[in-house]
Image 1 (cartoon, rainbow, N blue to C red):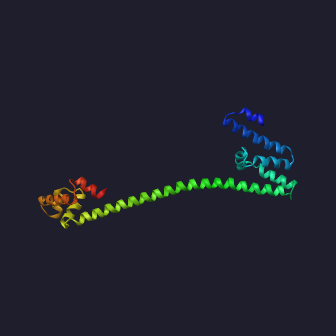
Image 2: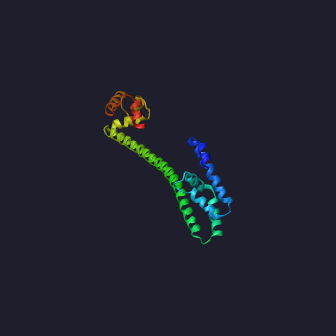
Image 3: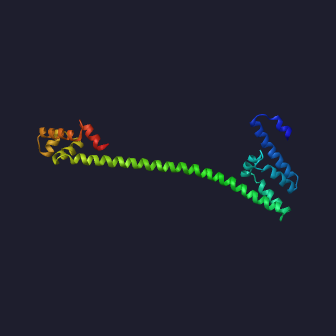
Length: 201
């Protein structure tokens, strides 16, 4: 093993070599058909100070070997302190591995979902506020007009011509023009298009 490590100088190659030796040692322990010897190898592979500890944690996520090994220990050494200690360590390591995975997944998915919901609520609030503000501006604008100017305004917004407005309100066209000019000044617009934009956009 020491010789094999000397062959690999790059970090990537050493990582591949670690992974290979991890599997080799694990298979060797299983082939010995002696749970105590296998337990010794497991202790080496799962040691936190060992370079192979990372592969042990990754392997623990998908490999059923560890549960099968526990069954072999219980079968051969049912009341041994070694068996109880292995079971406790295995349970602890599984809890750490799977709880960290769930925690990471939970945090990211719920974070994005929360941001999306908050963003939607804020956008909706701005939209409603803008509409309410526009509505208040329209009401305030209308309140500054006389009753007859409000009548003229309503007909202007219906795209009526000055002649149509005069006929509808029984006034002269020149009086309509006077009302239209007053409306433009009071509402600070210069054309019918601007007037419609004020009330419909």
